[in-house]
Length: 323
Ligand SMILES: Nc1ncnc2c1ncn2[C@@H]1O[C@H](COP(=O)(O)OP(=O)(O)OP(=O)(O)O)[C@@H](O)[C@H]1O
Ligand SMILES: [Mg+2]
Image (cartoon, rainbow, N blue to C red; front, side):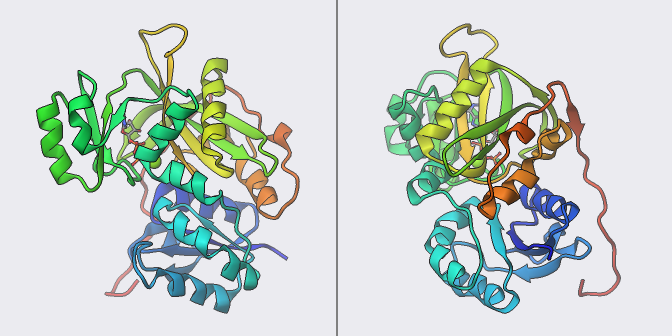
């Protein structure tokens, strides 16, 4: 029997690509999103579900309802705001026979809150940009600064400015902001799969061209120093399952401080198809881990210098006022 999997967040690249990859692996996909116009709801063969936003009080009942009715084998979330809610729903979902594979509460908090992430990495001695809250702006580092929402996703509301005065204004405009040293260098993402015993596979790729927060051109590479820092960030946060870590390799620094880790997300990254193109059986092994089968890390190795270019295409067109 093909597995039936509910994927949330199918309007954005991580959820859309995860839904498509699962279909290619023979799964039946139920797609969910808070936006009725989400592209992934229109993927052929996908059963569409509209959910309220994760911050909405109705979210809990709205997620459990289709699960009780359609009884998917599992639910996979690609929306970070949803993860704390989903962790709290683990038990009722299990009672419905719906499998989840979620990191624990602390790991979800460390990844989903960029202020917490900075503290956790600093505590574990993993290099990360100096980060302050708006009321600590006087202690912000000199030089260009990044102001961004501490609970952001998809690079929404990320601004670069030059002075603390500018940062102060941005802090008034951005919800729950943090202020961070602006790092320069070659940005990368690591597509990671951490099994239940804590063993991680890490696929590194440069983000060569980024549009709207999505790496539209990625190229895989190897770099033992970057890999070590990614592994340190995974261990520091305690994140498990499919996740991604982002960072920079500074052009002007050799030795310590060359690699800086900026982010970890407890979900698949938008650009993971690049890792798949480079040979990693990323979604296949994710599925195995989800259903408590052993992950074969030898199938998560990859070739460096594989470049993947993505482009927005038309999915469908239709006539009328309903879709
Ligand atoms: N401290 C920084 N220095 C330099 N660039 C930064 C910094 N913080 C963020 N950026 C840039 O902004 C982008 C989005 O930032 P970040 O990853 O923190 O936000 P996000 O909303 O969680 O995005 P994502 O969905 O990709 O995880 C980064 O990919 C990077 O290009
Ligand atoms: Mg993020």
